[in-house]
Length: 174
Image (cartoon, rainbow, N blue to C red):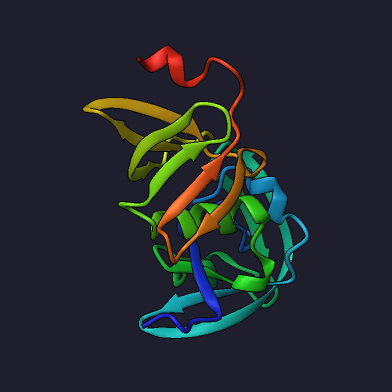
């Protein structure tokens, strides 16, 4: 069970070289946003172990080269393969916080400041580097880019998400 103050951000996929460096898949739109993170937690056989991060450098759109303090050789690094990687929720970027929050809002009504009622949030599509809100508008699919600049407010009591989208975006789908 993951403590409430932590969030799983990825997992170790493979070794990067022979000096204890790891390749980590990061479930985030911009892995480089986490280059300055100081600590990561690895779930090693059910035990969360904190590690000081010496290096976190983006490799691809969804992965980073990670060097952890105390992991200095291939044998030690091998023990961490396939481990889940967690981060303190306070370290999440605004965009990732929003994405996590929206994943919990399935069924909310989405309304655009100009267009009006768009429809019901079906789910958040995790398209690599470009997450989208999938909204059902009278049986038609409307995709809204998940960018914090487009989200004006969220009313949990009314189960509504107010967005302000570029002109014509919704009409592309209708």
